[in-house]
Amino acid sequence: MRNRALIIQIALLGCFFHSKAFLKAKIAVQLDSTILTLRNIQIVDVNKGVTMSGKEIVIKEGVIFKIRRQRRNLPDGILMDLKGAFIMPGLIDGHVHVTSPINNNIETTYKHLNYLVMHGVTSVRDAGGDGAALKLAKDEIRKGKRVGPDIYFSAFLAGDWYYNRDAGIRKEPYFSWEQRLVPGDNLDEAMLKAKSCGATGVKLYHSFDAPFLKDIVKAAKNHNLMVWGHSMLYPAKPIEVVQSGVQVLSHVSMLEVMRKTDDGTFYKRNRPAGYRDSVMATLNVTNFARVMKANHAILDATICVSVKSDPWVLPLLKRLHQQGVEISAGTDQIVDLMRTYPYLVDELSYFVMDCGFSNAEALRSATIIAAKVVGQQNNIGLIGKGRRADLIMMKENPLKNISALKNLDMVIKSGKILTVK
Image (cartoon, rainbow, N blue to C red; front, side, top):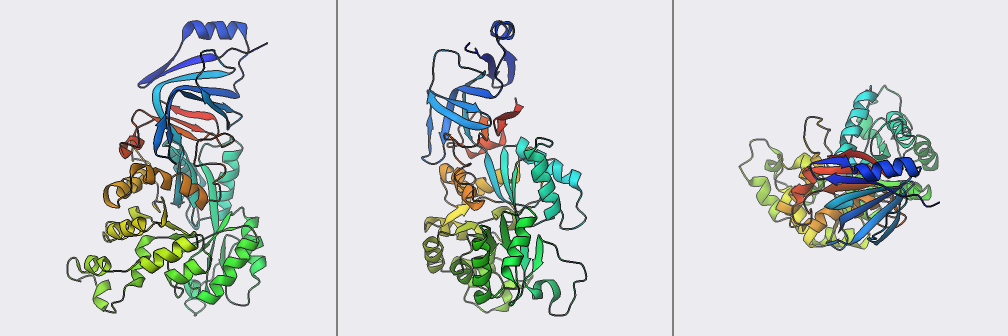
């Protein structure tokens, strides 16, 4: 016998059951709660930068089962009438830190993760933290015991100078998610340790030269780990980092090392007003952009964390964007539970208002491109058949107003409705 749908009318300022349909469904059928149909929606195609109407999304067992022309009849399972609201893929913050490196408070971590997903961030890449806490949180969320975004995290790798300054400073033990690597180490063993703690990538942080860096990158890729790193790895320079095969480079602010001047004034606190801005305005990034594109590398800009101290990052990112470098949205910010919307929205606003991005390009940086950052481009970042049903809904069209992301009316994570206004 064909199940009839429970109709849920979702108004933009509230929700209520359509009483007759509810009673009929309750008496006549047993609802299939694994099937959810979203109707009267405007799908935001972040890839093409357009909206599509007249279609409905059918979600089954957490995955988008069908996107089809809207039908008159009632489908199986639960039907939600969204009254013309805009719906797009869940956001991905490509650079977060939700744990403390040591002595982490796991309940604080859960609060941060819960805040992010309830505000539309359905996946995150943690770029270096307590691996044991991250694995626990990741597993608990996947089991449904906690509510949060999907977590992809790194094993933190650095050379001896970073940890010890060549003086044996560090006394604490190293961990599988926080390793010291020097030439001569067994790199295969290091990567197996990284995978054992649940890491899906490695974060290359500091104290690697170009030849050793290439060996590390090769070993990581041989073990199917994503390779993430700082734009400057001291001594390896940005172009050397790209040429080594690092897939995602973090921090546009680190590109200041490519400047030609050796004037020590650049770093002085009492430097003349606007001096650093004027130096960076003449930075030639053409070759860097060319090498980035040739190697299909992505720049994790993290504008939020550096713009106040280094406003020159805005015009610099604009030039890189104009030259076709792929930019991912990441905040590198500690979650502020008191904010009404996450820092990721600020990051996208900087992209649009100050860096020459169209709204569609900004949205792609936090969906399609960020999905590539975590190696999940076939599963998340787009609304499509067979993809994970991570979706956000809002009144306004984010293709016209990026601030629409500040006021979400619904978050769906893996097919489950988390919030409804």
